[in-house]
Amino acid sequence: MPVKRLFAFKGTLSNASIQHRLKYLITAALVALVFYLAILNRQWAHLENVFHFETSHNIPPSTSNHTIHKLAQDAQVQFKQLLGKRPVSLEQAASRYRERRGRHPPPGFDTWFLAAQETDAIVVEDFFDRIYHDINPFWALDPARLRRMIKDEQHYIRVRDGKAWFVSDHLELRQPWVQRWTELVEEMMPNLPDLDMVLNVMDETRVLVPWEEITKYVTEEQRQRDIFHPSKAITDYTKYQDEPSDKDEPPIKVKWIEGEQHQYWDHYRVTCPPGTPGHNMSSLETLDRSPSYPTQPLPFTTDGFIQNFTASTDPCLQPHIRGMHGTFIESVSMSTTHSLFPIFGGCKLPGNNEILIPAGMILDSYDLFSGGESHGGEWAMKKNELVWRGVASGGRHKDANWWGFQRLRFIQMMNGTTVSHLEAGEDVAPTFSLSELGEYQTQAQRNNSLGKWVSSFSDAAFVAFECFPRQEDGLCSYLDPYMELRNSIHMKEQYDYKFLPDIDGNSYSGRFRAFMRSTSLVLKSTIYTEWHDDRLIPWVHFVPFDNTFVDIYTIIEYYLRHDAEAHRIAEEGREWSEKVMRREDMKLYVWRLLLEYARVMDPAREKLAFVEDLKD
Ligand SMILES: *[C@@H]1O[C@H](CO)[C@@H](O)[C@H](O)[C@H]1NC(C)=O
Ligand SMILES: *[C@@H]1O[C@H](CO)[C@@H](O)[C@H](O)[C@H]1NC(C)=O
Ligand SMILES: *[C@@H]1O[C@H](CO)[C@@H](O)[C@H](O)[C@H]1NC(C)=O
Ligand SMILES: *[C@@H]1O[C@H](CO)[C@@H](O)[C@H](O)[C@H]1NC(C)=O
Ligand SMILES: *[C@@H]1O[C@H](CO)[C@@H](O)[C@H](O)[C@H]1NC(C)=O
Image (cartoon, rainbow, N blue to C red; front, top):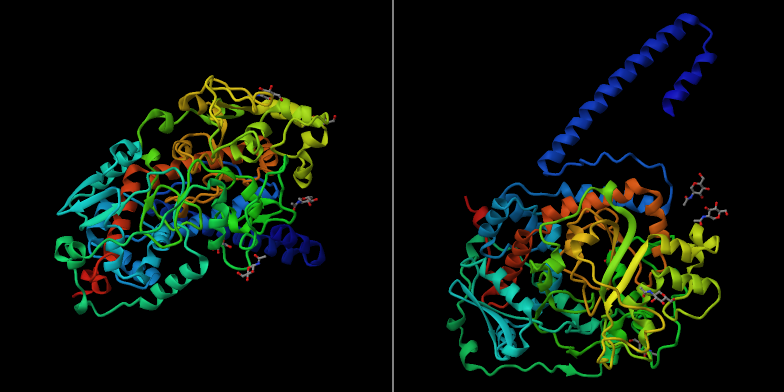
């Protein structure tokens, strides 16, 4: 544009020689500009090498002005900024820590940072924000009291004198992932101080501290922050047997509220800030035979697409989800408390107060969840289609509530036959409503051929129904008219499809990491938070979609039409997850978390600090 405008001046100059000179000047300026840009470009390339990040995918810039395209562009900028924050030395890492956390790092930080460097891990301080979100409230409770709270627990990993092992008084209750967690902690030995780590062995999430209380705790933690003089620092954690309260004082029992699986929403909403729509809405008494979609645009969307993925997981901002997610309709089991209690779990809802660690199933090398060594072939060789296979989990669905469950909704929406029947005016899909998709209309829906179009790309089905009550034959009388079971498809074969959607089950979905590491495009909707949330950027590494799924058709239509953009996200997601979601990265995350945990549980915690970098 500017160049064109410059030449437009030509006609207004009367003197030919001036015109001639001007041409030379402009040419010279252009040449200089080209050189300058080339140098800038080289510098940028050099910077990217420093961050061990190469934008190897020369995917041509798209001229689309679609909201999805803009969201992806903004996310790219955010991602570049994040990479610029990578520290190169222990001193820098410790200084970033003090800046962001308002404290000295915990003792052992140096060994941890060294291990991170040795495994070539990308350590950006922001990647660990989740740890502080989870741990900080515990600074408001007395450490001796905290130790007494976990004293009488049933399932925990114990660390003493540089050795780790699992303790349980209910061997038959033992979940496979407990084994995986213990192995991970063992790998950090002998670098961890003494600790006991209570584990959530249930599928469901647990602790729900009321908003007012947790806010008080968080404020108290901020008040206590202090970067004291290095000479005052203590560098050895207190051994458990040295602490009298560990031996003599009786345990403090936490009151777990059990049963009443359909009441979880009422327990949950006490965590919602006053003023959020969820705060004042009670559980649904009955579930209408068609879902209640939100009537207002959701605050975390732009033109209807997820703009803030973190907020999009928050049930407080979307109370309609209490009728559209199994967790709130009726979970398989429930055991919750409103007291802050230190328990570790693989996922949680944003309002839960568990301490997050990588979910056990993703630590498993079991092929079903990981796809083994295979990550799929070339993008161009894949089918232009979507695939999903899984269990109809999500909670206890029954004759009177099944249409609210997320996976059942997804399977119906991805069934072209069902959608065609709906278009013909038949009442065949109580799980969703086409008229709710008004503003999201795809070309196919405007043509009244949505069902036909869905059939052209979708292969989604259950491999098991998990009815309640369970039927002997594995079938499900109330689902029979609407859906059928299909054979499972091995993860390796799912990678032959371009689109891999991921939907919550009883809690988080165990496939996500394997999907991310594949060469296919991951589409994700969830109300759960996980350890990796701060290191993945939606629209750069995966495509987010809303928990009601109203946007899913439009998103698929967009990426079927913009194949290069889909390819780019698939590739960026794969490359990045191989850098920041490796087993080493999970180990480093838990290692650092456990240093913080051991410190907050330590009677001498105020002065426990790593300060070596500050000494001359
Ligand atoms: C995209 O551009 C077209 C024409 O250039 C315009 O009509 C349309 O409103 C734009 N859409 C958005 C989402 O900005
Ligand atoms: C709504 O929340 C406020 C503040 O917590 C409370 O005082 C009020 O009673 C609630 N109203 C209803 C209808 O639950
Ligand atoms: C996204 O939402 C989260 C949670 O609601 C909020 O803390 C954060 O500030 C939001 N981010 C942006 C960029 O608005
Ligand atoms: C919609 O209908 C038009 C005109 O009949 C047709 O050209 C187009 O291919 C159809 N599009 C879809 C997605 O069905
Ligand atoms: C798709 O829907 C039809 C009826 O609408 C049903 O007969 C069929 O079993 C469904 N397919 C799957 C895979 O669930």
